[in-house]
Each structure stands twice: as structure tokens, then as C-alpha cells.
Length: 230
Image 1 (tube, rainbow, N blue to C red):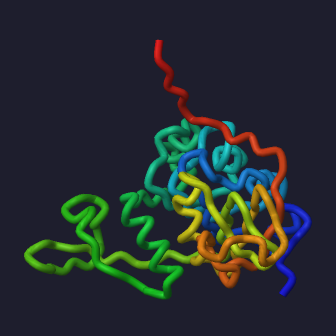
Image 2: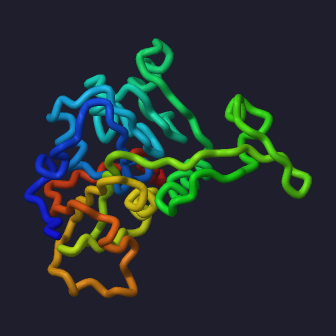
């Protein structure tokens, strides 16, 4: 199976209005910058986005929010995006806030084929409204359903032509489980090498989970906050 595509525009071919997509990364670290730009230029709308965060106003997912291309966000941390806040408070954007550990496990479960699981986080709060509750070992738990997506879009440090991926440090967060949970997984990588060049013992995502891969260019790798000493 030929998995290598020319660029991000080719990678998102076949994506339609109203579909669900997962976007890897943690804050602004390890986000698929090239594919986000391609989505912005595509004009796709009514999208449902599963992501740990909502980017910032002028970078990352913030670009899609600014264009009103996302109708619903399923996230755990959204505090750095004023446009997100405005759309939420005005009713323009549907939001499902999920505890971060629960979000990670819902994605992991989706990739592993586990339909649902019980977790104590959120019991007794608005997070638990309308959810099935059961007691285990004297503690109340909520039933949470797994998450999958039409497209999972991830960013890796290195990849090969068979789709095997290696993430680097914080970039491993959410990218790895999301790569398993998409019907079609798109991987953009900083370095693309021939099959067989990656050390098998270092591979985080086996190529069987990846359908499309390309080499990204011109990464900005913006830092959200810079803390320095006086």
C-alpha cells in the first residue's frame, strides 16, 4: 500500500463537511501545523474536533475557530483562546469539556476497540450529568464512551514510508493514542526515511495504523509562554 503523499493538501483529500477529526499535540507542542493550514485553506465547515486544547487565537486550532469551520469541540483545556471563549459564550460553538485523563483514555479505548469504561473522575459534577453510574470498591464511577474519528491527524518527529512513527518528548502526548483511533490516520513528519531505517525498538506507532504520511515543511513550533529569570 502506497502511503506517502505529496503534501498536506493531498493528505486531507476526501475529508468532507461535518466529519469528526482528532488533532494531536499538547498545547502548541507537536501539532500538525501543515495539515491545520491545509484545513484552513480547504474551506471545510461544520467540523467536529477532538483535541486536548483549542490552540491560541492566531495559531493552531485557533485558525480554524477564527474561520468558523468548527461547530463542536471535545477538549479538556481551552483557556488560551479568547475567540474560543467568545464563540462558546455566544452559543456559536458547541463544547464538550472532558477531564484530561478521561479524554486520553476515551481516545486510547477507541483505538483499542474498547467501547466504554468506568472512571471516577467527574462524579458528582456537571461532567456526570446524564451518565450511567456504578459503584466499584466503595467508590462511584461514571460510564464513559470511547472516542473515534473519521480522520486522525498527528505529527511525528520521524516516520518511514510504511507509516511507522517516532514522536519526540512532549510531542508524544495525544498523538500516539489518536493515531490508533482514526478510520483514516494522516501523519505529517519532520523527517521521512525509507522503510527499514527506523530502529524497531523506538517506534511508537506501527505503520499499520497510518494510511497517509508526508514530510512537513516550515515549522514555526511556537511557544505558548516563555518564562525567564530576571
